[in-house]
Structure formats: C-alpha cells, structure tokens
Length: 528
Image (cartoon, rainbow, N blue to C red; front, side, top):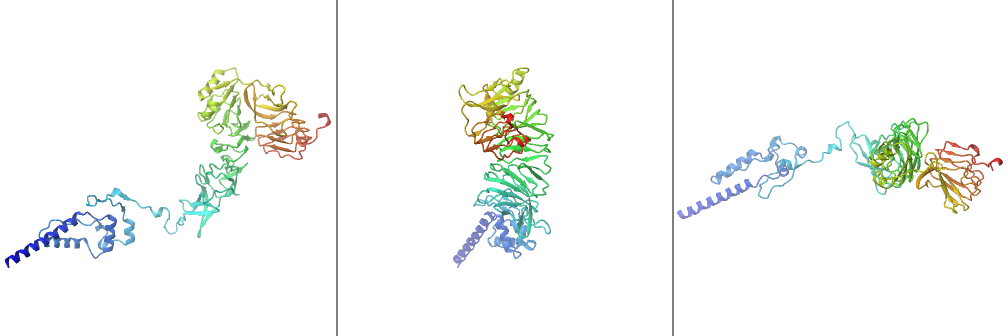
C-alpha cells in the first residue's frame, strides 16, 4: 500500500509539473499580433474579461504546486468588456500592424511599423448636405475627366483607348448619375503627344490650363473658345486671355506667321514652345507694346529682341536699334547659320541661343566705331566665327554664262531676289527665303520689281520671309495660274500679276497694301 501511495504521489507531482510547463511556455510565446488580438476580443465580447483570465491563471498556479509564471495582461483591454465598441468602430480605430514577431515571440509589433490605411474621406466626403461624392473617372467622347478636390468641378485628365485625332471638343460638363460637374481645368499632360489633333474647341467654363497640357500636339493648328468665356479668347488660332492682352499659347502645329492683336501687351516666349512650323511673327503699328521686323518680335522701340520663330530660316538680321537679346530668344531655332548685327548689342542673355548655334553660326559685324567692344559681347556669349558684312547695294549674280537667282543687299541687310540669264526657271517656282552675298547669308524679304516678268511659270510659292512683292514682278507670265502667298507678306505692287492666267488671288491677312484693283489687271500700254 505504501508503495502504491508513493507512485500516486509521484504521478500527481508529474502532472503538476507538466501543467506548470504548459503555463510557462504559454506566457512566453508573446502576445498575438495586434490585429488578431483585437479580433479575438471582438469575438469574446463581454463574456470573458481580463479579470476572469487572471483568476483562471491563479487557480492553475495553485494546482501546479507553486508555478511562479503569470501570463501578461492582454493588449486588447482598451476595447474589451462592457466598454468595447461596435465592430465598425473597432475596424476604424485598429491600426494595421506588420506581424514581424519572431517565432519565439522575442519581437513585439512596434508602433512605428503601423501602416496608415488610405482614408476614404479624402475621395468621398460623407458629410450631409455637402459636395456630392467623387465619382472617380468619367468618359466623354473618349476623353477622361476626373472630379476636382472641391467636389463640384472636373478636369480633363487624358484619353481612353486610341489617341484622339482631328477636331477635339472638350466637354463643358460631365455627369455621374444625377450629379453634374463643370469642366474648369485641363490637367498637365492631359493630351500630351496627341500628334494627330488638328484643332481643339474649349468650353466657356474652362478657367485653367496646366503647363504642358498640349505638349507634343505637333499638328494642332488652332484653338476655339465657347462664347461667353470669362477666361480665354482666340485670335488667329492662338489662345489669349479673355481681354486679349496676354498670349497664353500658340498651337504647336501653327504654320506661317502668327499675327499679334493690337491690344496684346504680354507675350511670354514660353507661349511659342514647340512651334517648329512658325516662320514669322507680325505686329501692326497699332500695337503699343510690340513690333516685328523680318518676322522677328521686338519691343516697340526695338531695343530688345524678344523672339525669333523656329522656322525663320538660316539667316537673321538683328535690328540696328537693338541693345539686348532676351532669354530664349533663339532657343527654338536650331537652323540659324548667319546672324547680322547692325547695331551695338550690349547684352545677350545666357539662354538666348543654344550651344549648337553658338558653335556653328557666323556673326556679321560691320567695321567701324566700337567694333572691338561689339565683338566682345558676342564672344563672351560664346560665338567664335565673325565676318564683315557685305555693302548695301552689293549684288550676287549667277556664275558667268549661267542662269539663276540674283540677290541684292538692301539697306536693312536683307535681300531682294530676281531671275537673271537666258534660261528660264522651273515652271513651278519657289522663291527662296535666304540667299548669299559676298559669302554671307541673308534673309530674302522682297521680290524685286519685274523680277520674273515674262517667264513661262505655271505656279509661284511665296515664303513667309517675303514682306513685299515689287511692281510688275510676274507680269505677262501668261501660263501662271496659281499663286500661294504665305502669311507675312505686307504689300503687293501694282500690276504684279497682270497678264497672267490668275483670275483671283487670296491675300494673306498680314497684307496691308496692294496695287489696288490693278494688281491683277493688264498694264496700260505706256507700261509695256
């Protein structure tokens, strides 16, 4: 019997020791991840409290004959018991904690590891009577719109599927269910690189166009704006502010000459960015802030050269009155090979020319007063090649015995052009935009009087560099039936196209003088 009691005693001690080990192991495995702890508490509700857990642990300790380890309080005490919130409240307040604890429980989740969930309220206001809930992205005619942070307006942000082509109309409003949103903004890069868009119609509701919204739209030739716009207006296809006082944007695909309205007083160079087809800028005498000479934009007194278009050609002449060349003035024109500076340019902005132009272009400076000082300014700007310009009135003839274009240097250091020699030019004649005299290239701005008279031409293309066509320039070209005159042409001399097959001619908007009703009629006998 005694031996039996001894075995029973050993058995009770072994069981107590086993239970104590279980309690010890359980107390050191570490708390469950926070998200699991909260979920466990939510399931338990108010039926089990931390106090009940402690009593159970105490009872186990007594039965295990003096086990000293006690499990730590649960982390979910704050939300457990009778004071615990509803499940929705718990999910709103519980942080999403990364479970980085090691298997042995040596690392507890740190507060710094918490990942803040995205707040729904930033996109969907839930206040009663406030703005409607944001509807995300909406589609209209293949264009994507998104509700602005104000919850009441929308922005054009892009397109869906194939890039838009041809004429594009921006919606004035977009609709989601019963909610309407006025379109007030075009976001940055919204139609970037849509190089087959030809025109864009903007709604009167539009208030803002972000920088680069139409970058890379190389075929975009014109804008239009809805009637009653309080923010924008259009002139010659270009976008201006509502009053027309500030140029906002010249479309990248605009070709020929950009005509500046008389009331415009603010023209940022950035407005012409990417306009590679633009060959000239015109400003009438009525503009109080700007003037244009040879397609180049100047301040009204010509003291500052503001901008030379990308397509102006290889030869440019800087006005004799110019003392400053402004920022990025020639940055878009990579083709320049010759610059003739007639006066004393005292300041050249560091960004006025690209490094490629500085290294390759030739600067023609007339000898005379302050020559070294004038040259020093261009040298300091980075130019390396200098020549003396030709003398006004000098003529460059075709080679002896040959036929071809003849160029005469005018007083403003531009050229007039004519045809010399027994052989005729090609029947489809293209007037050159630049020519060379005495080894230096200059811009061609005039077709000389009677320059091509009597030649067997069928068509003539006049480039935008040409400012004037002389008297009788194409008279008695009996086969001439087609004339293409680019923007930039300002005057056409009397009888310039008389005696030709031309029945009508469309003068560009820039033309302000032509030889009256007689420029297409036959010359009087006294002029033959």
